[in-house]
Each structure stands twice: as C-alpha cells, then as structure tokens.
Amino acid sequence: MTEGRRPRRVAETIRKHIAEALGRDVFDPRLGLLTVTRVDIGADLSLAKVYVRNLTGSTDEAERKSIEKAANHAAATLRRGLGARLGIKKTPHLVFSYDTGQDAIDRIEQLLGEIARDDPPRSE
Image (tube, rainbow, N blue to C red; front, side):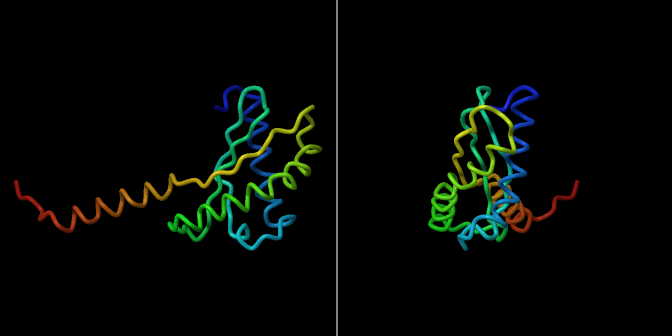
C-alpha cells in the first residue's frame, strides 16, 4: 500500500505522532500499553491503516476487539493533532487494526518447539 518516498515519509510521521499521542493525549486505559507497529498509507494519502499491538502480547480475541474499538474511537482526536504536523492539504482518515503478525510468529515457534521435543534426534 505504501509506495514511493512521500507516502513512506508521511506514514512514518503518522506512526511517530500516534505513538507519542497515545501516551500523552489519549486517556483510555485500554490504549495505555499500545505500541504502533506500522502504518500503511495509500498513494493518494487519504487513508492510513494503523497497526497497533498491546505490549503485553495478549492473545484474547475479545481484548483485541476492545483495543481496536477504543483506538478507532480515539482516531478523530489523534487525527486533529496530526493535521498540523503533516503539512498536507487533507489529513488522512485513520483506521486502526490489531497487528497479529507477532502472534503468528510466536505460534510457529511454539509448534516448532513441540516438534523438537517430540521428535528424537536422529543419528546418521
């Protein structure tokens, strides 16, 4: 989604701003331990998909949905603060999504560990 130098630069600015603002400007306790993992933005800079992750690494689906809902509820506040910082005509619409990438990596490592324990070493 993020292609070209300008969209990458805008996406990085959005990521930094939101990461700072989550700790400073947003007072929802569900968003207190969030980290912004990445931001994807379209070439027209109208929509930014912000991927967040709980620092505790919760795998509870209900908690993930709650975090997404709270983050999307705070999107308007975060977007207002972002407008002046970007210096572009239209501030992108922010859509938050929980980043499950690390959970998949953790699950694969867990499965490989189980295979290694169950499979006796082979002698050649």
